[in-house]
Length: 195
Image (tube, rainbow, N blue to C red; front, side, top):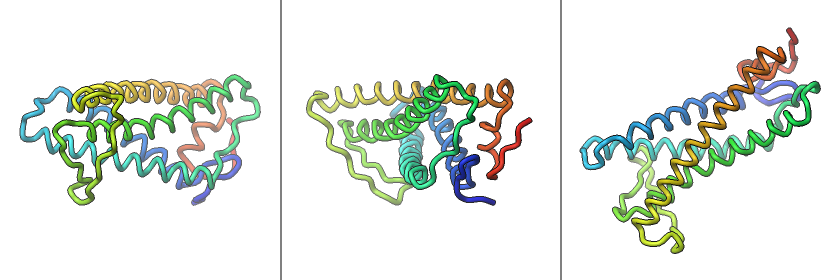
């Protein structure tokens, strides 16, 4: 098993980051949609929000680790036959995914920090996380929380859209272009095997 990326393939670390984060992010999106329909005063709701926040901090830590790994292990080259506009779209799409994977947990952290309830965040009931300073420009705490909640949801929906486009592009490469773009994210190896 190859741990590091090569020019033509992803290593095991990058593949694990990719799939762990994909599962976590999709799970958090669905979890978040479910939670917003619950009675906020119900006893079980508090525990669910705490779990959502804890998992959000896991995503934030993973995306920072993933970015560091990516800087030390550049991604494999895109297929040489790929048109310039598709290369640009791939680079912009990946930049957007990373930006949103950072922005969503940060907006959630800001939202919790702005809450007039002042409920502390303790990741998995072990690690206390301090509140962030919320800009005065956002108005009262209640207004700031409402604004940040809307932003958090908007960013999450934007990420969902980018994920759908990302999956569609991977499937296009696999079924129409018949190249290794998708296969190299499910297996390690430095060699490509055209069909």
